[in-house]
Length: 244
Image (cartoon, rainbow, N blue to C red; front, side, top):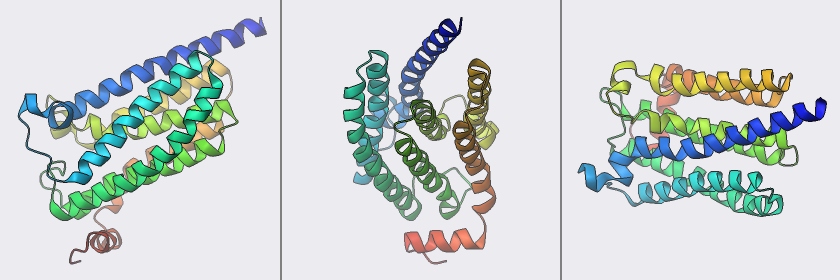
């Protein structure tokens, strides 16, 4: 019976991560398609800065890499998965550097991604913290690379961490109507559901998964509180070379 339970849990996890590997690119395409990937079809404004294209490229490669890594695990090509993980480390470092540069550039020179009525220096905290949270979660995933349960759950959190920018760009005016409750709330609800289902399926709480989830969710809402404080605005002004 125990063997059957273990096999059932593994089959469920394989199916779950396959679904994530499919839905992650679809979500990114829905969010960024009109303004980036399919901008010629939607006649969107041009992308003004080269760094945005570089960051878009490395993020696209990251989405594809995640899907490819899931495929290698499903096909039991563990060695290939591990070797490709080294590429993932380089790509993650590139994401961190280009992500920070893109965020600072948008705050300094302006960007269509900045919501109307929000000061660029205030909004800078959103992509800035996104990158920092990714760095922490990915570093933890590398630390636990020999602990498969912890590693894959932390990698799942890196995916969830990158959902808000895409979800905020969804059509039908959802962001304009609901704001952070939509683009932060949906990933947060999904994260809580995943932790609960994971605990129920395995009859055990994964404490690393829980800690990572709390860290990510807290970062979403704390940045909204901090964004207008003098401490953040002075730091953001220093980052962008703007007058404080």
